[in-house]
Length: 178
Image (tube, rainbow, N blue to C red):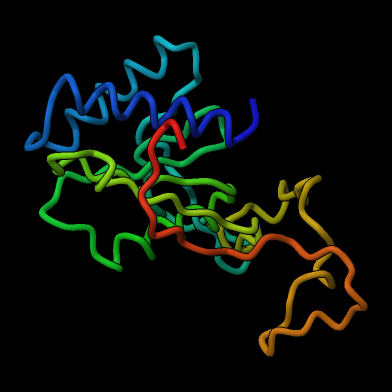
């Protein structure tokens, strides 16, 4: 399964959990329910996965924990809050970059209609080296050479050669049927 296929199952599971439990519970309840449901669907789920941070080649004793990583391809950050702020979106995008993964979902279960609480976030896999062990880091086979990234001025210095997908946040709401 690629990340898009996993993403569809993740969204279907989120809608199922929200239908059964409704809004207004703690994040930890939704995390446990999502973990249970996704595993029941045959997916590998890593709840509260620690992500180390490296500085000058040394592993620091700090980092972060990803709420859920599914099939080692999709990151899920769960919330049960009044509103999703731009900060939550930035944090989720940074988590994607640091792991690095291409696809993530920021899901706020504290919505009457879950479709209003789902933000799809994608990353071009340009993960920062300080969050990967320099002794074990390998380039991802689908990651294009660095010279194919678009420069800050928007040009790519090429004559139309293939460019990687940009990192962006899709602010539209996603449902499993779209």
